[in-house]
Every structure is written in structure tokens, then in C-alpha cells.
Image 1 (cartoon, rainbow, N blue to C red):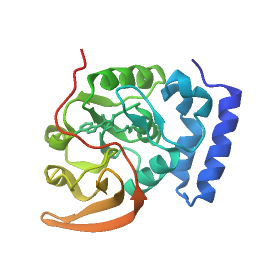
Image 2: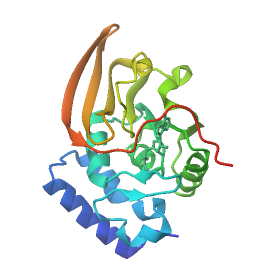
Image 3: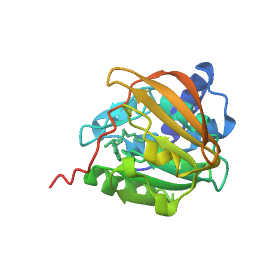
Length: 216
Ligand code: SAH
């Protein structure tokens, strides 16, 4: 599978749609314009790759809606060479967006199948990231502290263990709430023991669950 002229055209239209929906971070829009989302999709949904919707991937999970990826990535305020921890690798699309923006990406997935698949696709596209099969609730303290932590699954509460893995000035972006609806929450570490919370609208994600699934 390759990038195509047609897919490039559809991405331009998607970026225009995202601008209309209020996404203004040019670096984020450039990354969405560049990363071939169709290569991360289940073949059954290939023709929908540039529709602004979430779609099923394997293991009963989803590739996030492009608008959601754009909001979360904008809220992270990614700068080149930032160390970013992503919880919920899924298809690997969000990790590719972060890598495209020049971040050093660490990403954790609890489904072994997805963890394996995402590495193949990112490597074939020439993106580098550190992939981990494990439970994101624990984070990756040995690789921290991070400039940003991005959770791409719905957490019932803010996962406290992750807060201490942020640099001072670092930001955790996490959808917090019930399975029906979550509030996009940013927690900024403002000092060794101080954190500031802000809220950024309602979203729906697959749940953040404990433990791992080997699936064989
Ligand atoms: N960022 C992904 C979105 C995938 S959906 C993408 O761009 O495609 C969310 C993912 O979070 C799912 O793959 C799910 O298995 C994973 N997940 C849920 N709870 C987790 C946890 N505790 N640790 C790691 N991954 C988790």
C-alpha cells in the first residue's frame, strides 16, 4: 500500500474541514496533511480514511476521529524534540502524527496484536517511536519525565501515577468521564507539587482498561 495522488487530495480537504471546525495549530494541520491515514485503517474502511470519523481497527478498538487527534495534539503543544508518552497506541496513527511533528515518541498499548501491527506500519513509513506492550496506567517512569503525556482512551479518573512523570511545565491530555461521555482535560504541572486543570469539551473514546491482552 502506498500514498496516492488521490489520498493526498483527500487529506487537503480534510485539513480544510478541520480548519472550519476550529483547529488552528499549523504544525498539527501540516502533520495531518502529511501522514497517510488510509495506511492505518482496516481495509474494509479504506475508502473512508479521510472522512472525519472514528473507525474500527482490530481487537475491538478504534482509530480516533481526525478532529479528536487534532484537538488532543493541539492541547499537548508539541515542540520539536519534546518527549511525549502516548497511552493507547491503537493503529499507531496518533503516534505517527507526533513523530511527524518531530517529537520523541514513547507509546504503550495493552493489546499485543495492536502493539505488533503499529510498529510494522510506522517503521514502513520511516517514523521512529519506542513501542511498549503493557498497561499505560503505570506509565513509563524509567523513560520520563515527559514534556507531554497523551491518553487516547477514556479514563474514569485522572491516572495519578502519570502526573509525577511530567516535567514541570509538562501537560497531560486525557479524556475523563463515564463510557458515554468524557471531558477533555488538560493537567499542567506548574511546580513539584502543583497542577492546574482546564477542560476542553466533550468527546467519546473507547475505555482505558487495566492489564494487558495477549490474544493468543
Ligand atoms: N491513538 C490510537 C487510538 C486508539 S483507541 C490511534 O491513533 O489509533 C485507544 C487505545 O487505547 C486502544 O487500542 C486500547 O486498547 C488502548 N488502551 C486502553 N487502555 C489502555 C491501557 N491501560 N494501557 C495501554 N493502552 C490502553
